[in-house]
Image (cartoon, rainbow, N blue to C red; front, side, top):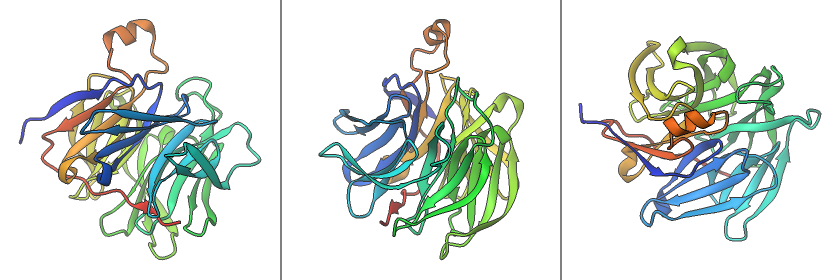
Length: 299
């Protein structure tokens, strides 16, 4: 095993950092701070951060094939023009649920933007339950609704052969799998592939590595865990110096580094003194496994 190194590369003090995405062309990490309504882009070479503030909570961001980015803002799928700091609404969901917002989102191998919703929290992980749903925005801007009764729609990714969709509804404390049809975007046959243990706390964001294993961010658990979705076994635990881990992605040279986001919201002053890097962006090297490049929205 190579020796694992964990460092806070950006002390951003995010209230709730989320949705890390590596942009290879700019050697940059994109991420959001949901309640601060911010999209951020950290240049790994210059170490500079650019920030754009929106008019509603920004919960996920993704690359776009035609340039720029797409993001989920409030209950809207939006296209972003970074230079002009402007957003164009592509579609809106959950019109009947005024207290809802999008949460995590990611683009599938066919260029559809999957994202799910939840009720706005009164405190971290405290909210009206079963208010959310999972959606995808097709390249032609058609919105497909997959299912509702979701608590906190969270981590998502696809198997390397594109035949399985992995998904987390946080308060089920489970990582689930669906059969996935790349051609149609249909999902079916939901089952659990891993149930979190008590000390792992709440499953949040998720990504897949080049060996087809899943990495899950454990909110309040202070760790990311590596799972084998075929055997249902946990293969590895990497502990971080902060508790509220929210999401993870691979990036850097050959996608050999892992970037991890976390949150400060919900921590008391004593907790923040103990964990001064809470809300920062962490880089983990020496994992001995690489990730895969993110997909780009095709619309």
